[in-house]
Length: 170
Image (cartoon, rainbow, N blue to C red; front, side, top):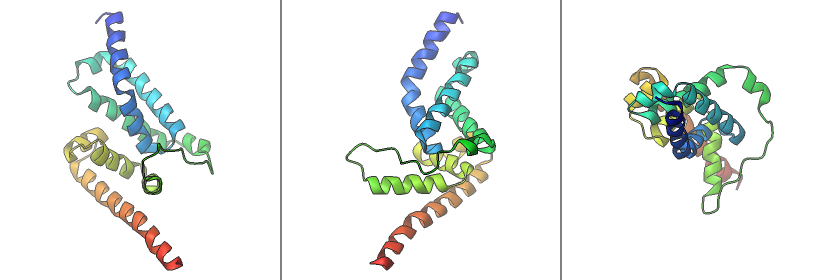
């Protein structure tokens, strides 16, 4: 593949999918600054391996797997723990959205362990089947089922606990 053609094809792909990558990355990490870092690292890895990616039938799946693996590797690294902004204000959301519910869901999602969060994002935001999510995470379908179950239980508990506390206080 000629370098100019390769670069044009890569640029076209990234321009069309960067918004989607950014949304998935934000759901994984919950911080727009880390989101940008994750997307940039994913794009860099895609570029380095573009000759291989160009031959793959499902480029989005390849990019998603790089993104998830990069996120999970970062979670295992002690570096991100030293750079987390403590007490930062949440990013604002566009009007017309139930801000309270959105913030509650984001807070509950960010409280999940990294693998459970990745499983929920892949299964319910990216709308992947159990087998596709297992392939993206590099684990068994049974692992995806158990991670999803635990994550959904934690989300339900987190999201239903708040109204109960509010009712008791009234």
